[in-house]
Every structure is written in C-alpha cells, then in structure tokens.
Image (cartoon, rainbow, N blue to C red; front, top):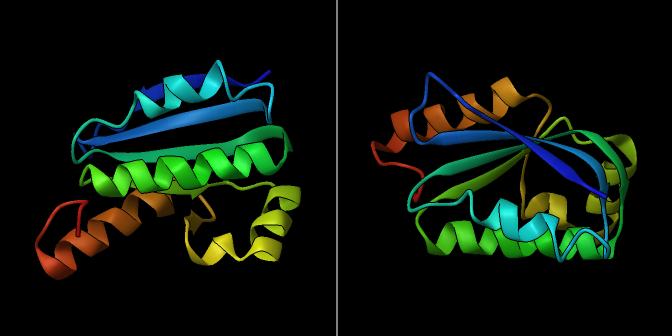
Length: 126
C-alpha cells in the first residue's frame, strides 16, 4: 500500500513536495490517488519524490498521466523526482518519460519550475 508524506516547500509558496513510499499499483488507486489528486489546487506545482516507491505497475503509470493531465488543465504542473530505476525503465519503455516532467532530485524539480517562470514570466501553467 502506498503512503504519502507531505511537506510544503518554503521557497515556493505554490509548490507542494510529496514523498511517496510503498507501491504504486492497482491496489493503491482507490485510496492513495484521491489524496494525491487533492493536492492540486489551481496553479500549484506538485513535485512527487518517488524515492520510496517499491513497486510500480501500469495502474500507477495511468494515474501519473491522469494527474499530469489534471495539473495542466488546472493551470498547475506535475514533476517527478528521484525516480527509482525500475520506474525509469517503465517510463522510458512506454515513452511517458517524454510526456512527464522527470528530474533527478527534488531540488532540480523545484528549480525547473523557477527557471520556466524566469524565462517566460508566467506561473506554472506556462
């Protein structure tokens, strides 16, 4: 079962960093994902720190894509950080690493947002 631990990034008011631990699979869809979707509010950026993920399957992948779509529709954004090797392999195999905003670290994921805002002068819905 996946768990989520939340922390607000003090440097970016509209950025939420969530540490995900456990499994991202068909079992966690009904309990875990509604909590993650609730983190997106307006033009907020959500960074998922996936360093604690033990297992990831197609249901988890589908939910990441749905979360990414919901973020974009609401003017926000989603970034993934610290993606474990087995997850990176599945993202690469399916081509979703080209669709999702993947970063090596949480710091890079948050900084990626700042660079985009600096470059075009607009918020997360760039």
